[in-house]
Length: 306
Image (spheres, rainbow, N blue to C red):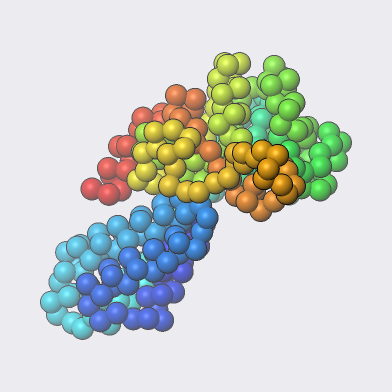
């Protein structure tokens, strides 16, 4: 989502060329807001668009750009911004491969990794470990609204990851959320992705991640979050209900309301629901810049924004 949002802003600059620096920043700000309003959960989009706008401002403030603004028309500057933006996206796309290399080293022979949420970054990390010849196992927690079987990966989210790992010779067990606590005695670590990494080092991720991290903490199992730095977002939630999104996870009814009972895990809204995992439940964050403790996120944000 962050990269898709950034790519759309680059296309915007290409096809709706502004004539001044002020118009450029106004155009990006206006259309970033349009993108966010179109999403029920704009956190990942916000991380990408805010970071890209900051990158454009830094580019415009660079000595070479300042010199160009004083010697040529804005068309050349705009073309330079588009080229710089495309380079920015290219570097961001490479981040997943770098994380796979770094995070794959956390997976050791004989370990068992528990994961959930069908994160592409987690999948890349596990693929990298398998390609290195590491002998490990995986426990995949399937969403409650999706059929599951310990011997068959068909029928729901995570199919690609499960099938690919099994194809590489990695043994994978598929379980439902109710079996998570039962399985913790057999696992070595928990590894999850994130939609956004907030200022205090906590994460916003698919609904159920908070529960998973709490169970892991109680069982004294390490929780690793793998996420690209373009998912770092300037947001400081105080708790589950302090996120800037509207969710109806809790649908209170009485007998006078009528209608069918809403079942969690069955619809698109449930698939998009997220929760907030505080930093005290996270062992480390793995990004393309290395392995960091959660408190280091604020320092990384300072480097990006200031």
